[in-house]
Length: 265
Image (cartoon, helix red, strand yellow):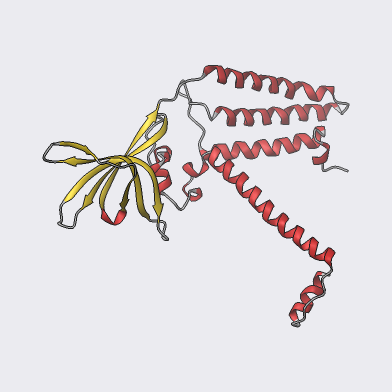
């Protein structure tokens, strides 16, 4: 059917398509678009949750201003300015040039920004804006709610971050550790209740144990490091994720945990 369809198109003929074939083509088009959207959203979430774009320059957005204005640039390998908490707001100091050649200093809280077609910073939107007055030697409030600044008038800008101090939540950490302990007990005991050979039980326990180590390392990497523990790098997180997936697939082949994923006969 497909060969005949393309053959007719190649000879400038309009192919005959039945209603069932048209519906099949429509289903395929919708399925392709939906699958691409779901996979794209899924891998985007994985990339952002594991902070792979922050650690690996090749995975970062073309919009580099996102990392500067959201404070994520502080956690990249280029800066490594330590973990001072979550950035809750960004303040901007700008030196704007006037038509008479003089400059004025403006400050405000960044609300939004716009890029041009070349992904260069085009416009800034500030709130709570003030202007430094040399005569008063103080900042004067500018009336209004949103102060719009075209970048063509900006000589330079300074970025300041307001941090929310991260609070330790030991209770949540203990809950995670308790769940991890339960999973560990399950990993080393479950294979012995299955009617399989002794070697399959041993290798099943081993693969589940390795999966548990990889999974626990990934989960604990989201907690602040303590007692001199070195946090996992982006490459280490990727390696742990790959090991976890491979070991779970191997465990499924040995123990047949999920029959639909079992590849044997």
